[in-house]
Amino acid sequence: MADVTVQDLSQVAIEEVAGRSLWADARHRFLKNKAAVTSLAILAVITITCFAAPYLGLRPQDDVNYDMMPAAPPDFAAGYYFGSDDNGRDLFVRTLFGGQVSLTVATVATLVSLFIGVVWGAMSGFIGGRIDGGMMRLVDILYSIPFIFFVILLTVVFGRYIVLIYFAIGSVSWLDMARIVRGQTLGLKRKEFIEAAHANGISTWAIVWRHIIPNCLGPVVVYVTLTIPNVILTESFISFLGMGVQEPESSWGTLVSEGAKVIETAPWMLLPGIVLAVTLLCLNFIGDGLRDALDPKDR
Amino acid sequence: MLQYFLKRLGGAIPTLFIIITVSFFLVHAAPGGPFDTERRMTKEIEANLKHAYHLDESVPQQYLRYLNGLLHGDFGPSFQSKDFTVSELIVGGFPTSLGLGSLAMLLALVVGLAAGILAAFRQNTATDYTVIGVSMVGIAVPNFVMAPILSLVFGLWLKVLPVGSWDKWSNIVLPVVALALPQIATIARLMRGSMLEVLRSNYVRTARAKGLPNRITIMRHAIRAAIIPVVSYLGPGVANIITGSVVIEQIYGIPGIGRYFVQGALNRDYTLVMGVTIFYGVIIILCNLVADLLYGVLDPKVRYD
Image 1 (cartoon, one colour):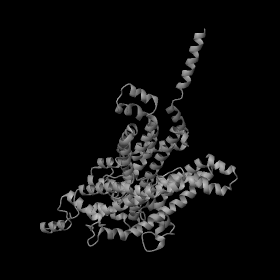
Image 2: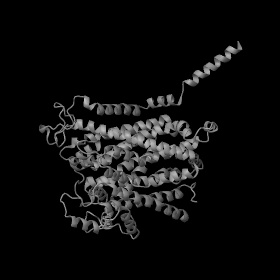
Image 3: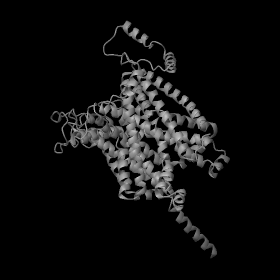
């Protein structure tokens, strides 16, 4: 009889523990954050519309309509939801295609910065000592460099290869990530399970990859969502100056730059800028929501 | 303190060296040269031009020549603006850029700190939510979107501020506001967060418990500690203002240094691009240094050794 009772109790205990993992907890808190959930929905709509644009039966982005030239205001009956630009092109379609470029840049550049930052920070923190000092000194030096100038120079060097612009932006955005991951690693590396891994003869690289990095995931996820808007901003900044994406391709930055020149006569040409701002706003809300969800002690 | 200052100043030299070296080789790696034009020049003229600017030497040789010039305070001649040296162009544009940038930073500090402190004191009230909401918008809306919108609303619809000229004092209002808005937003958020934390801390409670007037508790104890994250934002903040001023100068047609960088990069004006990069690099390094020194003044836990 006594045996059965003990067994029952242990089962009850297991069931209770299983119900509340860190991630389930975080998801629960995130879903309660109305601003973040709304932002996620809006962002999903924008992203899906942008990438589904070729299949929505809209006119092609280089379709020139002489009746809508130069720059005609929005005309819902004719299907020009954002009006047209100076060349009589459908601004709504151009905004969607520009969004594809901007969002792709955001994803690729963020992945690049994620990879460099996480590996750099984890190695630096885990190895420690003089190597750590040197690696972090380099981060400090890069911090005090006017990095936007370097991105501009890189885009000038690489010219029209748009893929390289992605990498240029990514390769200068990893500094904060490296610092955050290093901080986490320093806290983790004295833990018993790392010591156990050492005792089992696992290589440094494998420990970093299999044990350190997965345990840094929370802050990294938060920081990634905050890197994405910065990357979009950088790309559109460069394109705004006329150095990023080139015609007939467009990004939100180039569209804003075209719109800014004609605000007096065609204020609707700033609509792509509004879409850009809404996207950035959503990403910021999602990032804040994730931070509150994953790191409750911070608030 | 002085020792720490000198040590940090010494540490800035390798940083500066890296800036110079990387930007030099990047600029020279860009395809095309400063004298590529639509019209074909005769070989002799091109050779003479290149010789006059030492472009016929190898890149490492040019690099050493450039470094040597820098050590003598010479940024070299501008390749595109004939008869001007880079120093002359920078000195000519700097007062305008400095005025614009420092007014924007001042505005950002005053408004941002006030809004942040106010929001912290009225946590979870309408005031607080307004500050949070407005600063979210300020962070999310890029200043090259904000600037045209401001011109449209205040210049063209309300007609309270002039746009598209640069001869009156009131011309500077819109550019300064457009430049300052993202910084106001960031500073307000930082200040609100750290103020909330400080107000809950034990030493503020102690100060209140021993009967200090509220004003003195806040001025002497709370704000002094809460402002530290804002001070550490000073370096990146100045960098952001500089970056922003490149676009703002472009949009409002302001004769500052920012536009030189864009023109220079597009025209392969090697020396001009280098000059502006180095110049801004120095400013950012100095601002970071000032921020580090301010920590010591504000935070008794920081020791310089």
